Structures are given as structure tokens and as C-alpha cells.
Image (tube, rainbow, N blue to C red; front, side):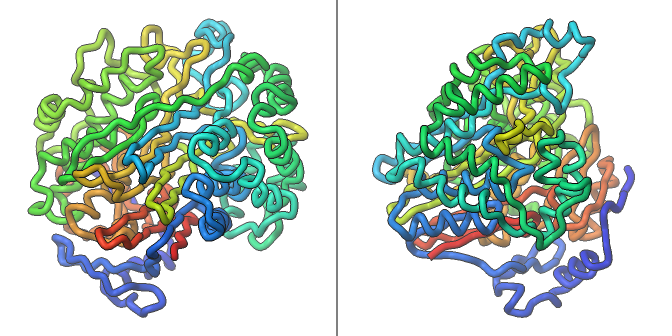
Length: 577
């Protein structure tokens, strides 16, 4: 029952105080929307709101959002814009996603009302038997390095999405990213700080690009990656096959084998993305959709369903009772997640049982007025120890709604910052470390196996109305924080009638291990004291930090207006017209 203040500086303390006391209200920084919380703290939008009548894009970088906006304005559809944005993000957010990463996405077809899901997460090597790792004295997968690399799925996702829904070629979609990789882009303050921390961990090929001369790139400098421009050009010319069956795939496989990885060229050649359906649950008269396991998306649905047992409106926005109950539902859902979420092609993942409202009502009844660290899965299993999953991670998110009403919710990632910390020499491609999501525990659903997909924190989400019509796309980076932040924003939007921007800017929580929880410092002292008295081990954090993710929202109103929200905790940018 401790309170720790973490990462505070004078500028953020002053900013937070100004927001809480309603002094920070000039039109350049705040909109007129006000939300009265249960503690009589007035929340106001800090960032100007963006909205439009025809189309909208949000992404993790201004250049990616600009590309998507340009594609829509030129007559492209939501998928054309999304793939163009995804390619650009692989260049301008290089430590968080890559040509060498994975992708999940949701697609809403305005003509049919159908929602489809794309799982383009990579598979383990054909040689990846548990014994390959235990024979090296390992009791669990390392978190970085060659043993954590699975086949990268992102490039396959670009091609598959355009073939199914797009109107432009893969070559056209990649051209803006190729130009920026070749000619360079400005290193922002955010990127400079991230490269200073993560750059030293890279292999020599990676350091030559992102940490040259053993020093971080400074804000305002130009970052070029001509080898990546060459790789993207090869993909644009020959299609995704060059990444899996051609020269690029062979280079990656040869490099990884030399580094001690079990991956081989045949593993790249056999990879195919998977089209599937979304998994959905009702909430507040709406339907919330996400991607199925091996993604953690069902955690969001579990949390929202358990939240449906709470008197949310009466509790009050960000009140101590609401936060206590949400924190506890997060732990309960994670207990199920860590025990069960795995590749359903290899393990019996009881999605129906985990999402059964009667089951979740019983799970919610476990919550007392005290914080608990003792939740285990509520479904019968032989062994409830679970996998030892490292839940930290970095990711990018993007979303698009076009003039016809088609919508895309898209997430791609390296997992941790710079993933495996390995760049394949001569390609400019950094490889992910998603294999760290596997377990070596005998009999665990997520135990590594040849051709198996690992547990994934990546998830995408959408909301439709009771008639199945698109209403919102929502998502965020943040590893295990993703379902927590999305749950909080959906409740802010649909229970407390907040605008997308205010839903995003509102203070958040994020759980740690045991009874640990990090709280936004802007929460009222009375709320913090109450949660402490209930047994939560609290760390206070400044508000605008990456640990709280980077939420994005596009919400379509009944009058057709597309209202957006973009989080300033990282570099999210919204554009609409």
C-alpha cells in the first residue's frame, strides 16, 4: 500500500496542475467540451479536435497520416490508405514496427456490413521443438535475439489486404515509404529519445543506421535508410513473394541460421496470412469486435462484459470504485489470458467458455473491496501456473474510414523496441522478437512447437451499432496495456459521453504484477488515497508518457460526421475532411 511518484518533472507537474484547475483553457490548447467527474475535476480537451464529413485517418506519425489522407483525397479507399500508411510507419517509426514484424487488422465493408479479420502473425520454425531450446539450458525463451524471431507476417498482410479490398497496386502503396526511406525524414524529439535508449542494443548493421558513430541521432537530424528503400522497392516490384520465397527471404533465413536461429528458408516460403472472422460481444447496446486468439483481444471483451455488471454511470468517471473494479477485472481477465491464449490450430482455446456471460458474472463476483493478487483461471485446467510472459512492448496503430464508410483498424509491431535487436545486413530490415511470447512449459497451450504462432499482445478493435453498422474504430500500442486503455476509452465514450479526443486524454491506469498499478498523476488525491487504502500498490506517473499507450479513435456520428481522437502521449496524428 505505497504511493511512488515516477518520472515527474516540473513542466509536466505545472501542465497537470493547469489542466486540473481549468487554467489551461486558451483556444489554442483546449476545446470547449467539459466533463464533470465524480470528484468535481473538470476535464477539457487539450489537443484541438479533428473531424470531417468524407474521410478520416489516424496513425502513429504525421507523415503516415498525411500519406493516408492523400490516398483518400486521390480517390483511394480505406484499405489503399491503410497499406500506404502501414508501409510509411515501417520507415518513420523504425523501433516499433518493421518490414520484419507482424500485423493484425479488422476490415468493415460498408456495402455488405461484414467485418473480417486478418491474422498475419508469423509462425515458429519447423525446427522449433521445445528441445531445441531446453538443450541449450533455457528454462524460458529469451526476450530478444535470434531465438525469438518467427517468420515476419507484415509484408504478406499488405499484399493480402490490397488483393482482397484495395483499388491500387502494392507498388503504388509503397512508393511514398520508399521515397522517405531513401531521401530521409526529420528525427523528432520523441524518436531521438527512443533511439538514445534502444540504439545501443542493436547489432552492428542496426547501429550503423540508428546509432551511428556510437552516438544517438539528435532531434532535427535526418534519418535515411537506403537499404530499406531497396528492400521496399524489391517488394514493390516483385510482390510479397520476394520476402518469403525470393531473395529477401533467403537473405533473412541465411542470416538467422548463422546467428543460431532455427528458422530456415523453407519456413519463410511456407508462410501464408489467415483470413478469419472477428469475435464480438455486446456492450451498452453496441457490439464490440476484436481479433481472435492467438491475439489477446478477448481480454477486452471479458473486461467490458464484466464491466457490464457495474453501475458505471452511478460510480462516476474515474472514481475510486470504478477504477478499483476495472483494475480487478483486468487481473481476472489476464489470469485467463495467460493460461489459455495460444494458437488455436495447436491448442484448444475455449473462447466460448471464456466469453460466456454467466462465467464472467461469476468471475466478476470474485472482486471484493480489497486489491487481490490471487486470481487464477476460472476454467478447469491440469496446471494453472501459466506462461511467464514479458508483457512490455512497442507497436504502431493506424485507422482509416473512407467516404463510402469502409473502415480499417490495423496494428503492426516488432514487439519490444527494435524487436530482436537484429537488422539483416544489406536489407535495412529489423526483425521482431515475437517468439518471446512462447512458453517452454510442458503441456502449456502456448508451448512452442514447429509452425505454431505465439501468444500476441497485438489486437485491433471496432464498434458497430445494434444494426451492425460501423460506429467506431479504436486501438493503441502498449503491450498488455492495449485492452486496458481501450476498455477505459470505450467506457468514457459510451457511458460518460466523452468526445473521442477527451476519451483519449482522460487519465488512465495500467496494472503491473501482483497488486501494483500505475496511475496518471492527474487523478484526484482522494481517489489515489482510496485506492491505496484498498490495498493497491500505487505508482504515480506523469500523464503524457508512452507507458500509457497512444490511443486512436475514429467515431461516426448519426449525422455522418467522422469525429477523431489522437493521443499526444506518443506521436499520433489525425487528419480528416
